[in-house]
Length: 325
Picture 1: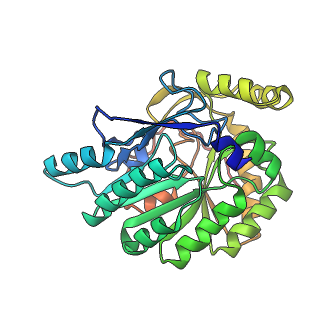
Picture 2 (picture 1 turned 90 degrees about the horizontal axis):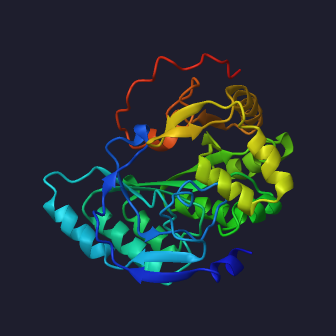
């Protein structure tokens, strides 16, 4: 399925005319700049916030910014102070299986690392060997996160049809960590009733612990009108209807620069996170509930952002004091 879906996408070379580097919208990543090498993503995750934007290209279309390395070099040369970190592909994935895309990603990452700029990324794709070799030359500057929610192939086919299979992502972890690169797991977005069943969590955390992982960052599915439309269009009705019904009493919060993001009701997230924490503890893993995606709960700063050692804004006083024990 992974390879088949890639054939549906036709990478189109285009030029980026606007600024390459821009501020990251996530509060805990203040001071980190974002860089996207493409517009569109062949991973076609049904819950993707970027695919839900009105200006997002249609499924099957992938725009690769062929002039990005030259534009990036010019922007870096104009900066009075170089950024301490750049996050690769916050609205897409840096490791989609297309040579033209991978070439641009490699040039951008190499340029940043050669200048002493930290590179961070989250991927659900396969990381080619040449990238691992590049990152191994700068282990103190690379912070990698592998997105991993379930080992169930049915979940993978239904919710993340274009991503690398779970076993490939586990192999990414193994190769990165053997190369001395700081790599962790992001368990996000958790889908209550689908990915947080005890038996599924036990299998996942057992596999992750074998790769030396001792903590995972946890985030939950949220919806906006465009995301809800994607879920209805691309999931079977027997899956989308009960899933969306869980949001009926969910609060509206500001998440990632959008003030109209609907979260799952807090009691659903608290109950789900309890199951996740119980399963993780059995394998010596500490789950960290993402504060940025749960602004109404007593959550924490993700390990992924802690690794970059940036100061974050104080928690809002309006958080609910619901017990996570």
